[in-house]
Length: 217
Image (tube, rainbow, N blue to C red):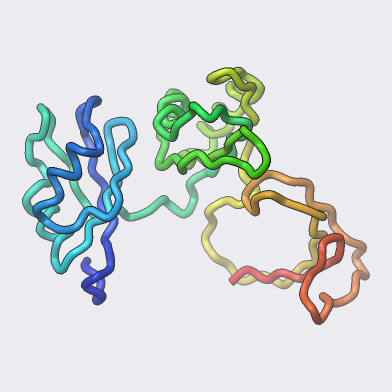
């Protein structure tokens, strides 16, 4: 499991946490096994980046199944999100909204695999985030129920993200029309297809408002 680079932090999933478990609690718990680089606590689970030679292996062996604050912990290496999870864009968020708030809001519709930290748009007080749900059906239900509803004083903008996790495939290069501006590559925006006889991509790279050719890696 461990990387050949002893200085690289390993991401661990910590599940079945008590509701009142804090970042400080987990930092103290995992600290004896290695350096806790980051610790992100959500509702009843957390992700920890643990650094040190053999630190992650040792923490898993000694802490998985151990009772902590009245619950038996689940500690394992984070395997990341499934390739076919569904990514939902959530916009116009209040500055008071946290990832934990969104986790709690969306999990009423289905299993939430991960909720990215709320980010603030430039020149705007509104933030946005991405919620990764296990099933597309649950994501669609959440979108239909939450889009336009007021949450922490702001009407939410909820829709499928333009960029969805998929299994890589080899497909022919296709022309697309680049919009003149896009604040975030994952944020929804209108994409216009160019004329079928559009010429090759400019030598200097794509410019806003011009056709370019993309081939997935």
